[in-house]
Image (cartoon, rainbow, N blue to C red):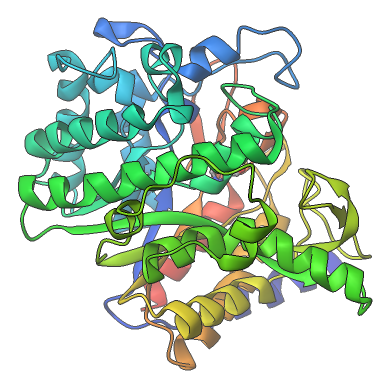
Amino acid sequence: MSNNAKSVQSLEERAAALHFPASFRFGAATSSYQIEGGMDADGKGESIWDRFTRRPGVINDGSSGDVACDSYHRWPDDIALLREMGLGSYRFSLSWPRMQPDGRGKMNAKGIGYYDRLIDALLRDGIEPFVTLYHWDLPQELQDSGGWYDRETAHRFADYAELAVAVLGDRVKHWTTLNEPWTFAWSGHACGEDAPGFADGVRGGLAASHHALLAHGLAVPRIRGAAPGSDVGIVLDFNVVHAATDASTDMAAARRFEGVQNRWYLDAVFKGSYPEDILKLCAGLLPDIRPEDNATIAQPLDYLGMNVYRRSVIGAGSDLPPLNFARTNPPGRYSALNWEIWPQCIREALEYVHRDYAPQQIFITENGLATLAERPGADGRVFDPARAEYIVDHLEQVSKALASGVPVKGYFAWTLIDNFEWAYGHSAQFGLAHVDRRTLDRRLKYSGEIFGQIARNGR
Ligand code: IFM
């Protein structure tokens, strides 16, 4: 047997050895802008990503989500893939400007109809919808009046959340307010890599973060009011942060980085106040944080969604003053996005959050590997053993966290199908299924087959 065949065999044996409780949920995740296309179909309004992707040079390969995977029309193909893998849960997001084109006022019946059909079909197939209300596609109209720099946007989000839940909440039992406020606040407002493209440094990141968290806090009771008995949570993205060396300067930089990436959100949501060290460090750069905001943000939640991909190894440097950090890349394996592959990070993140914040339930709402876009081989199959291995490695760590008492209730792979990876366009892909960019036909990859086997046999 060749070495490749041996390593595939041992991977498949490790996949077969994975066991989770019967109630553990296996699913796949996507987001509206990354898969739907239908950019202006049926009355959809413009989003900040529709506008941002028009700027020359901001997307690696010059692509956009105008068509993406055309899931606006091909959603039955997406559901067929979920069925093929035997997944019992699907996490997707609503496009706010498809639901409510101007971000305020009138809802769009045709946009609601799209999600109605999707949800009904999922339920017919026994697949539980986990719905995110905001995965980065802010209505451009709201951006024009200040976007996440404007406190009013938080109120508009709460209004929209209530209206969306009122029409879909009879069938959807798991609601998420925001996906990854750290990323959309900082990449969109501090560094300018993502929409709306502001490079306003720490002041921008903190203002957008605070208003996003306020939006979350204002929305939670409105969601509960519109769909009593449903589970409500938020999805945060975690980097397990390690200091590059034992030098006190590196350790302090790692602590600052970890403060804005993790504790800023966790402390606000679970403890009702922002971390003192970050408030002190960033005094003078803070938005208007009113005394009552802390209580508004710290709503009791039914679950925390954790997106975990990597470890960040941080030393002292000059990025984003006064955070003054530098990312370092220790020797190891890296993804096509240059993210370190370090599977222990998922267990470390789960144990840290459980120990310090004790959410009632935790879902891994995203985890997956970016590779360069793959092509089917001569036999028509897309063989991506690196992604299959990534999933098995990380699930082994999740299972260890479970054994150590962390209430982790499910795992969603990112992502169902190769899609529009934000500033990377289609140059890097995370899909369990390949999408032919010409025909948009979907085809399960080897990683999807392995993940399906784990989902079917591993409980
Ligand atoms: O594609 C993104 C997703 O939209 C949010 N979490 C990280 C993924 C990979 O970059």
